[in-house]
Length: 79
Ligand code: FES
Ligand code: FES
Image (tube, helix red, strand yellow):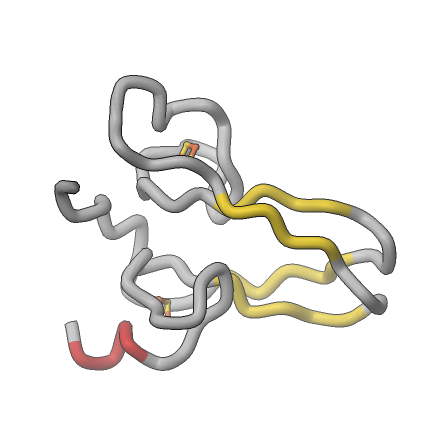
């Protein structure tokens, strides 16, 4: 597996809605960050499903290197 493309070295804050499902871009190629737009086609990557349990702000990983994908775990600060 090759490394993902770093979309940005910072998380994307998103207000999610309870019960709604989101597909986080793992490959970093999407033009609709932090979510998948299908650009991973032909790579080894696949989007990661995230279902919101509550209305709240989520910090989705933008560097694609988080150990807790799809959310940021601070790894971006070491890149
Ligand atoms: Fe990146 Fe789909 S576009 S996982
Ligand atoms: Fe990827 Fe923070 S943006 S770990």
